[in-house]
Image 1 (cartoon, rainbow, N blue to C red):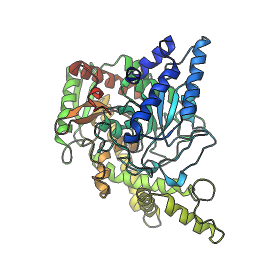
Image 2 (image 1 turned 120 degrees about the vertical axis):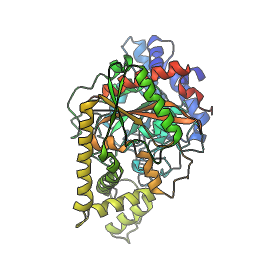
Image 3 (image 1 turned 180 degrees about the vertical axis):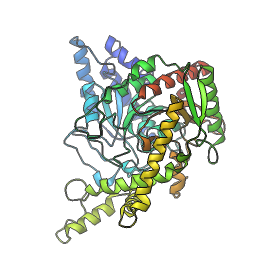
Length: 497
C-alpha cells in the first residue's frame, strides 16, 4: 500500500494502463490510507467508498476490453466540497446545506468522471470558501500533515491536507483570493489558479462570482498540468467561461525551461509582516531562476498595496448577493417551520442557525457596502482600484513574461492563533489577492522549508490571462532544479502519520 500511495498521478496512470496495477488496487490503497490517518487529519467530510470502487472497476473493465485509457484514468482524486456531485452530499462546509444531496453534477465533476478519474470523496473547507485556515468549517478544522496543530491553509485545506498526507495524489480546489495557492504553500504541495473563466463554474457553489475559480491541486507540477487539461475548457452553461483552446499546459510541464525568459519580482511583495525564513527561501528561488538562465527584473506595482482593501469590499458584496438564495424555503436547512412563523421568520431563523460567524460577518460587510448612500464610496471605489491593479499587471507583463513572489507572508500558523483576529487572518492572502482581482493565472509550488520552524514555503508564479502554460514552464524548471539540489521531493520530509 505504501508504495502505491507514494506514486505520482502520472506514474499511477501509467501502471494502470500497462496492467501493472489495477484501478481497484490503487483505489483500495488510498481508501485504506484514509481509514488509517484521516481521523487525525480530518481532510474529508464524506468518503464515497462504494462510488469510488465502482468507478475503479469501470476503468479496469475498459482496459480489459482493450479500450484506450486517458492520461489520468483510474487515478484517485479528492474533490473540494463546493462542487455538486449527483447522489453525494455537498455541504460547502456549512450547516445550512448539511445532508443536501445534489440532483446533478457540476461541469467539473462531469469532466472528471468522463476522464475516468476516481473521485474518493468530498474534502473539508472553510464555510462557503470564506477563510484562510479551514477553521471556519462547520464540521471542525483540518490539521496540517506537517504539524497537526497547525492550519493546512484555506479555504481548501481539506484538499491540500489530503495530498500532503498521501490520502490522494490529486485534488480539486477553488481560488477566490488565494484558496488554492495558500493551502499549497503551507502544505508543500502544488496548487494552480487558472485564468478566470478557464474552468467552468457551473455547479460550483458561488461565493464571489467575479473572483471564484476552480483549479488543480497535486504533489508535482506535471500532475497538476494533467489535471488542468482534464477540467479546463469552454462550457456554454457558464456565462463567464472563455471560448478558447486550453493552453498547452502538459507540454509546458514536460519541457520546463526559463532560459532567456524575463521574470519579474514585485517590490510590494515583501517587507513588514513577512517571515524571515519565507523571504530567505524566496530569494534562494530567485537565485535558482538566475542560475537556470532567466533575467530577473524588479517591478513596481503601487496599486497592489490596495488589493487587500479592495478585495474585502468586492468579495463580501458579491457573497451577500449570492448567499441570499439560502433562505430555508427551497432546499437545505429549515428552522422554525412549525406553522407559527411567517416565511420571513423561517428565513431569518434558518440563516441564524445555518451560517457561521465568518459568513455572517462577510454578508453584513457586503450588504453595508452595497447599501444606498455607500455603494459609490465603498463598492464603486473598490472596483476602480481593481482596474488600477489590472493596469499594473498589464504594464508589468509588457516588461516580463512571468512574475514570481512568495505565496504567503508566513508559514502555517497554529490552529486558533488568528481565530479572534480577522485582519491577521486576512493578511495570509496578501500576495495572492491581486491575481484574482485581475483574473490572471497563478501557481504555488514548494521552494524549501523555513529554517526557523522547518515548515514549507511556497513560491508563487503569475502569468498573464490565458498564458497558463507559462506557469508550468517556469514551475517545472524550478521543481526539477529543487529536486536535483536536494535529491528528493520536498514532501518526503513531512512527518509520517
